[in-house]
Image (cartoon, chains in turn red, cyan, yellow, orange):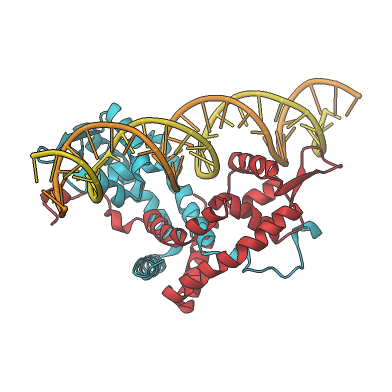
Length: 157
Length: 157
DNA sequence: TGAATTCACTTAACATGTTAAGTATACTCC
DNA sequence: GGAGTATACTTAACATGTTAAGTGAATTCA
């Protein structure tokens, strides 16, 4: 099956690929996202567009920078996504009178309708994942990820 | 601090954002990658270019599709990355005589030198992460991620 | 054996990731 | 109160993510 090409006996100056934390996290995330993407696609949304809509559904409105942080999007990406969602009339912006640099982004009625249409399908994906991996395993994973995040954020780079 | 804008008392038809598995994995991965990116940047490499070089360093050569799987890259992305790395003379391709569709990708001498230059810096980042989060916590996380991956891959979508 | 299918990529097109630079607006402090 | 600085985005440019379509080479099977 695997021939010599796939091995290499040389001692390497670093750990092997299977023990890469970013790779392990990417692989795990991909195995989860594979469940969501086809569903989102049926609704005509990308993963990131859905993150924005979902992030706004929990609130009345957010500043662009607050929304970016909540959705784990960089500002330039969010700028483009908001431009797209505005043309679709899913979100609207309201100028902040006391600070013309800022604007508050919120869902339109159409945007909220879209959220309500997608949410049950999204929950169904979560249910599948819980069934496959177990609620306990999932809760433990959340907790471990949170601990890691806290440990890394609270330490200077 | 947080004003009304940031809350919304309406009952929503799905879990809140903090309990999104893809988001939790993304957040954790970002907190790790923030340690690596500046280092890679100093070496003039993107995260993905480094994945390819690292993936090739462990072997004598791989077919493009094998490399894509190992590096968690989609074929079109890998095509472009290989084109870039070829112009930099870090990787080379060898045609497979028995099947002209395939080619074997491998590191050049320059590519291996680059790997050997970056590897210690990469290991230093891992050491930082281990120090911040602890080796036990990290090993447990790896194991939990692997379990999740196995659970989701072995179940039909 | 040759038409149909499958395979291993590659291209194309558009969305997002990433860094740097640009543009108003707000703030600071002399 | 005005120069200097900081803030909150937005643009620009290039790399990658994602899906669909294209291309040539191998395989299948009637």
